Length: 321
Image (cartoon, rainbow, N blue to C red; front, side):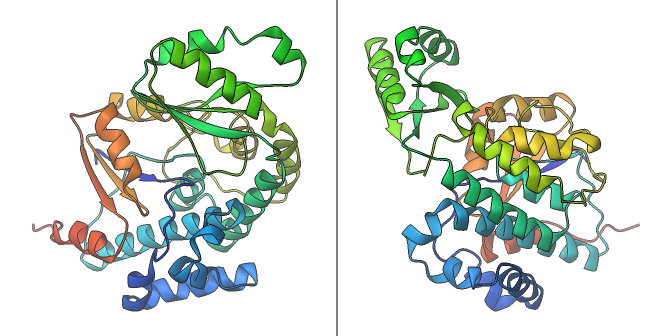
């Protein structure tokens, strides 16, 4: 098949996520209840009812989104199987945190272990946030942004200030991470070059930058306790924008915290190898929008709730001999 499954990352969470799916599906209830037991608190209640500021916290948003992607993909896969339909994706991929749901879909990560793992990831990332943050730069050329970052003053660098490219999401949408002083410098420098849209993001730290080195080191020890399996489907890695080597899963996941998310390159990698349809499993439809900007020639579908899942399944019919 020329399809790839993709899973969104932090920022796609929304109060009410999976509430309709939970009400309609016994399998969804089993998986959400299992996540609650694995964490020792009702993640599902937080997903369904909020409050939004608590759900948005990194240590909560990350397991919530992992569960959402895993549940929606599982329901889709099992519904296809019940209809006698086989759909083998060429690749699976996820944006940052979404890579964990991709690993689950590829059979490389057990569900409940994944729930606990991403909860710990979120805790470590939140604790290492410090005073830094992230900002989206919209409508600017990547080459311009890279040229500006190359001019970062040595005096600020020596003082411990930083600003770095964190996410290459799509043409005209890049994200920076840095200290407060570093981000202020970048905003001023980019506005001098004609950039008009510099939007600070509601996150708890400067993710995907060297400022997360402490969290990455601590997380490496956590990952050493996880028994990853060889993926049954090729997983496209954020760090390299290439197929993830089974032997390197733990190391790449540790690096991912402090390295840029190469989403544009990842999508182009899959398209260049024949993918003509992407299916996003998770709330918000953010990746669908990014993929349409990166590769307008491909088809993109989303399943973020019960209606989206039903719509996706309605398009499929049992193959007839």
